[in-house]
Image (tube, rainbow, N blue to C red; front, side):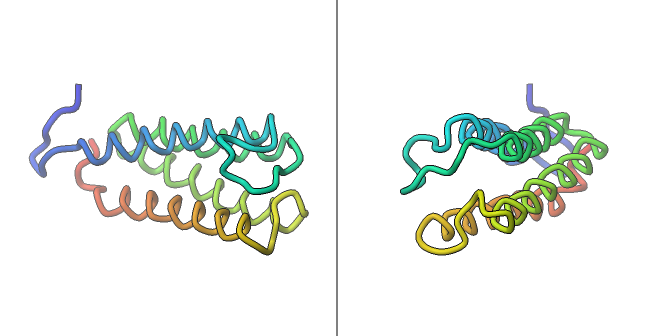
Length: 127
């Protein structure tokens, strides 16, 4: 159960952690199939590196869901690894560097950075 702390509710933290976990699972599916829910206009080649990057995102979300400072720190680390992994995928040519799909990759990275920012902003609410 999500508890209230002296600083207020932690529902937002739980939602962000759940989002990161689910988004990571989506990236793992992309790594296995090349696309997920038709989000990409052009499928990318299935790749182990994409699966690993998605795993970082999910581990980040699960770490955040612990509601502990160590979990938050690990969550920030894992999600930062996911953002760097996106850059890696573009650099080695698995992910596109131009066009609409590249924009989707940038937006996804910005969302991941927003998750990191939110967790850092809520730092005092972690045990």
